[in-house]
Image 1 (cartoon, one colour):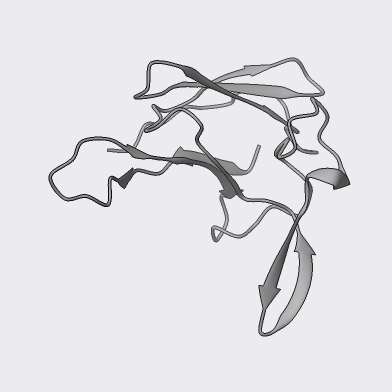
Image 2 (cartoon, rainbow, N blue to C red; image 1 turned 90 degrees about the vertical axis):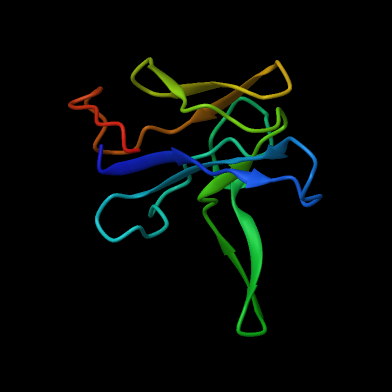
Length: 121
């Protein structure tokens, strides 16, 4: 669908401690830009709409943008499993805390189901 989906790994700030956290990220595959539509259910209301956009300060100005990532509530995340029902996608990632991180997403206007899969190491 023209998107690159990946998780980040942010290690624990205490050098000798285990654990950490992650973000689930979704960007435009052509150049790594923010997607031009609301993608993530940031407010967890099971709908993806303008209420999920976020405000940022850019060059001293507050602007509202579409979120490109969502912080984990389950520690370090695995690569997500994606289930598509047409109008929405759900991404499931197991976390290092033992729980499952679930995100509802808008698959976007180019959604045609999975066309290919490539895991990068």
